[in-house]
Amino acid sequence: MQDLEIYIRDLEAGKVSHWLENHISQLILDDSDVSSIIKGSACFGEDQLKITLYPQAFGKRYTSLIIEGERLPWNSDLECARSAWRALDTEIRCSPGEWKEGEPAEDEKWWRLDNRGEQLVVWN
Image (cartoon, rainbow, N blue to C red; front, side):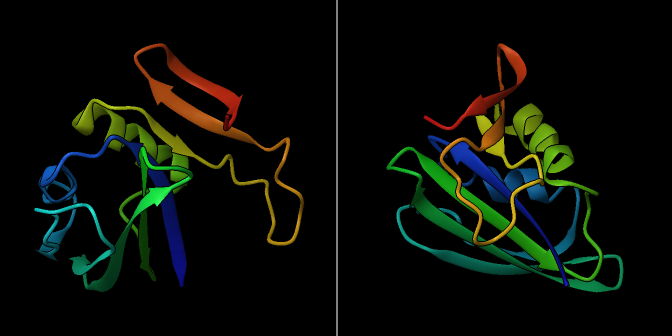
C-alpha cells in the first residue's frame, strides 16, 4: 500500500472532490462540510483508493488529505501538491519525503507551494 499526503490551507467546502474528479473515477467523498474528518473512496484504473481529510492538522488553518492505494494518480507528495495547488489556488504543503517515523521533526523542511512559487521551508 502506498500513500500520498498533502496539507491544504483554508480548505473550502467542495473543492477537494471537484479537483479529484478530474484525476480518479467513482469518487465517493462528501466534502460539503470540511469541519470534521471525512472518509471516502475512489478508483484509479482498476485499483481502489481510500481518501481521508483531517481538518485542523498543524493548527486550525490546514487540512490533511491522505490518499491510499496500490497505485496512485501521482508518483509523489510533491506531484500531488502541484496538482492541488493549480486546482485549489491556496497554499499547499507536503513533506519532501526524507523524514522517517520516530525522527525529530523540529528542523524538518516542507515544500510550500503558493503564489510565491515552490520553496522548502520550516513549517512555522
